Image (tube, rainbow, N blue to C red):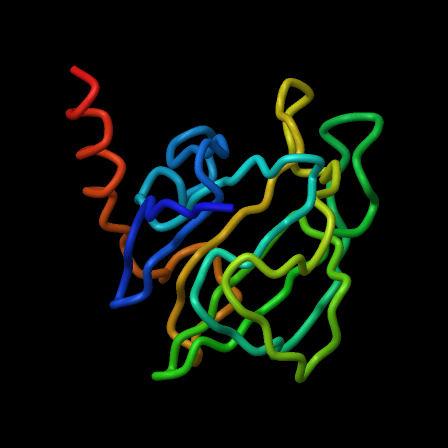
Length: 158
C-alpha cells in the first residue's frame, strides 16, 4: 500500500493511503474553519495511523449530542504522543489500541464511528489535529496545517 502526504504541521507530516478521500473544510467546527483539522474517510471505516510513529497517550470518552438518530451517545477522544511536545488528537474513532502501545504509519488503531456530532449527511471519518501536548483537548489551539502538498496535487491535474 502506498501513502501520500496530504498536509504538514509543526514538522509532522500527515500521510494516508493513496486515493483515500479527505477534507479540510467539510465542517463548521472551528478546527476546520481555521485549517487546523482534517477529516479522513478511510476504507471500511478502518482508521490507520497517518504519521510516522506515535504512542497511545490517553483515551477519553465524553457525552455526544445526537444530531442524527444513528449517532453514538459517547464520543471517543484519543491522544497519540508524537514527541517534541506534540500530540495527535483523534475524534470519531473507537480505539482498538491500549495506552502505552506504539504505532507506526499505516497501523490500524480503531474503527470510525457514526458520531453524534456528525450531520445526517456526513459519512463516518477520523478527525485529526496536531496539537501542543500541554493543550490537547480544546477546540482551538491546534497547529495550522500546511496544505501545500494537497494544493500541489490539484495544480498538477489542471
